[in-house]
Length: 247
Picture 1 (cartoon, rainbow, N blue to C red):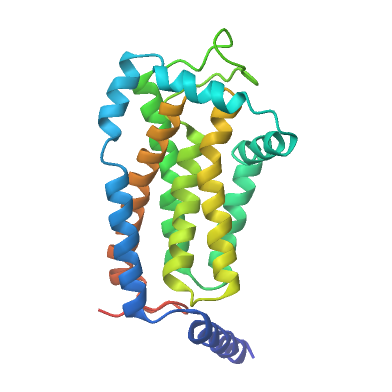
Picture 2 (picture 1 turned 135 degrees about the vertical axis):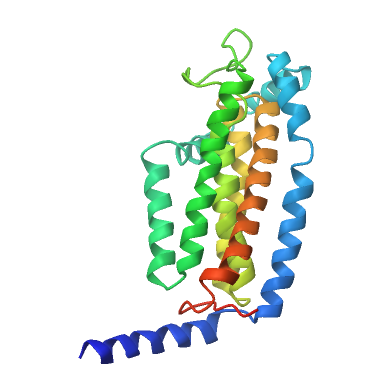
């Protein structure tokens, strides 16, 4: 009985693989494109981190924040609060756990492991904060929703969405065949990544340069995650039920 159920489960996963997963050459081509973009995007992170350590904020930081906060549209304000809210505990942990559980349940075992590696970008961000030691924006200069105890550079919220949701977007982009569902997922993940930065600036909890540094650091960790995923899948998870790999 158990053996029959196991064969049935494998048959179901095989059908999912054939119906939803793009061919391997297509997956490889998409991966290289995404990887190159991530590496180019993070080229200036070190220089920006050094500058942020020396200067509490730049003139452009003040200009961007005041420009964003000068807009008082009700929908825009609610959207900024909602996007930023997703990056706080406990909701961020629940979303991580749900996404990782889904990957595991549909048979994407190595993708599950790699997604946990992607979460490590938040730990790197915390370390950079301690090294750079940049203070948060001051309520004397701009509107600040709430004073947070951690340092300002780079934005942890932005690093989180860039690394974790960026990797989920990479999986959707490279593994799934074109469909409305694939497009919808890519739009959602892209919106979270793009809007998280402005939301942190709008709430007065980060400067523009904090956000840009976070996108660069997140892009670097995302590239490392993709490299880790590609290299180790060839060695350890070539024969998993879904999205199998061959040399």
